[in-house]
Image: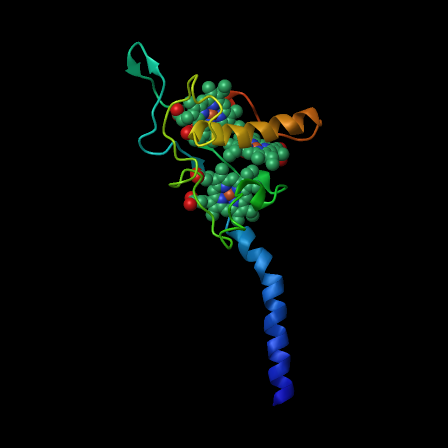
Length: 142
Ligand code: HEC
Ligand code: HEC
Ligand code: HEC
């Protein structure tokens, strides 16, 4: 009786060890995931009127499996594994259009995404590794 209890506890513990990484990998959204500008996003003015938004950005997690989740979801360890939206309140939540005054401001939606996505693609390119695009029309496609 005692022995079998010990054995089942051991099995449960082992199962946790094996299952944990599988569960977190399965947590990534499917490849039809599309990143959109948050509601209320402002755009640069054109002829005195707000310009159009860029096309949205399809993002395939499976193409980015070489990177750790934490490399992009950089707050998840601090939050006990919880994944936030990049534009959640208190994060990259500035809806201002990029201009002279805020060109480097990382609270800006545009800068937060471009810094992470384009910087990595460019870095990998200089290292002659497989990489993603840095041309506007190759990401803003939909
Ligand atoms: C590696 C992919 C990638 C590339 C390359 C890229 N962007 Fe983006 N951009 C994004 C993502 C992701 C967002 C956040 C989602 C959104 O707002 O559409 C974004 C947001 C923006 C925004 C703010 C939202 C909006 O629609 O106004 C602007 C402006 C923008 N990008 C312009 C550009 C321009 C101009 C270029 C080329 C010089 C460019 N992007 C290249 C991925 C990219
Ligand atoms: C190369 C960067 C990158 C990597 C690596 C990455 N993600 Fe993501 N993930 C994103 C981006 C960008 C979004 C869009 C977030 C947004 O729209 O605010 C996203 C969205 C998500 C979402 C949906 C969040 C929501 O509320 O809509 C989940 C869940 C998620 N990722 C899980 C994972 C898991 C689990 C891993 C590791 C197995 C992972 N991601 C690896 C960049 C990445
Ligand atoms: C840690 C580095 C890294 C980051 C961060 C990163 N990428 Fe990539 N991306 C890659 C690599 C590597 C590839 C090439 C994968 C392949 O060819 O198998 C790639 C490929 C792509 C492609 C072309 C493949 C496809 O899905 O059609 C797109 C589009 C793309 N990335 C968009 C993004 C966007 C949008 C972001 C930011 C939300 C982003 N990437 C962040 C490394 C990165």
